[in-house]
Length: 85
Image 1 (cartoon, rainbow, N blue to C red):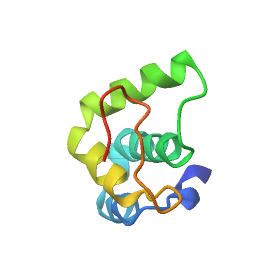
Image 2 (image 1 turned 45 degrees about the horizontal axis):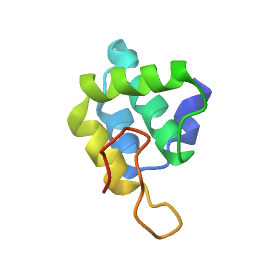
Image 3 (image 1 turned 60 degrees about the vertical axis):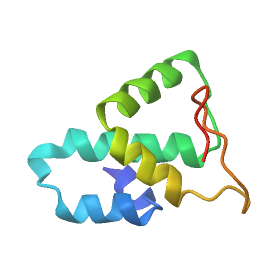
């Protein structure tokens, strides 16, 4: 689970500490969502589908990760149409 070391937002780090390992799909989803957002966008249609699925499954978590992800000190434009912070 190399992706656990790459968590950058405090929100995801806190969820890793709190979550039971029986719920590793939840932690994996948060880390994948954070990685896509931190990278400033999507690389493929499949990744867009993954992000859309994760966003609909974890809407509060998506918003928290978006709020904690600073992009060059400016506002982040989400890869999802119509979503910005």
